[in-house]
Amino acid sequence: MNSTNEREGFSERLQQALKSAHYSPDSPTRLAREFNIRFEGRPITVHAARKWLVGEAIPTQEKLRMIAQWLGVPADWLRFGSNDKEAPNGDGTNGSARFESADVKLISDLQRLDDHHKQLAREFIRMLVRMNHQK
Image 1: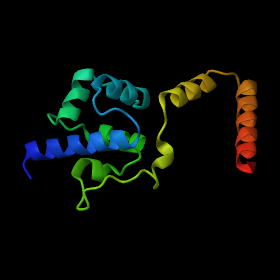
Image 2: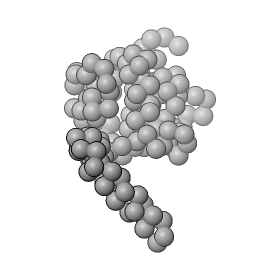
Image 3: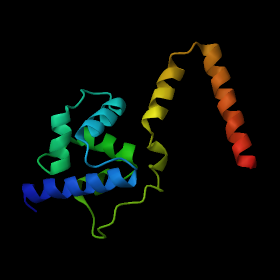
């Protein structure tokens, strides 16, 4: 497979994974923002995100692994594809790694609390989960 086909294939799989995770594959700005919220390294630009979406570039392995974890797909599928032509449905091992922007903000807010209030928040969340399971 030549490099142009590899980039285009990656772009198609990225768009498919974004759609499956309920993100628009048409917004490099949103892709860059969501990526940068989750990635601990150097942030990407909107231009870099656009290049990934249109098949002009493939992210580094470190960035690709983070995207795969965020979108709940295997990194090797995202990079190289597979024979079955279908995106993984996200119900496997990485499904719990998907977070919405509001979830990331909530976790960030939780981290800013003092220890006492963090513990109260954890207990409250556990109580809500138990109540939800009893329904």
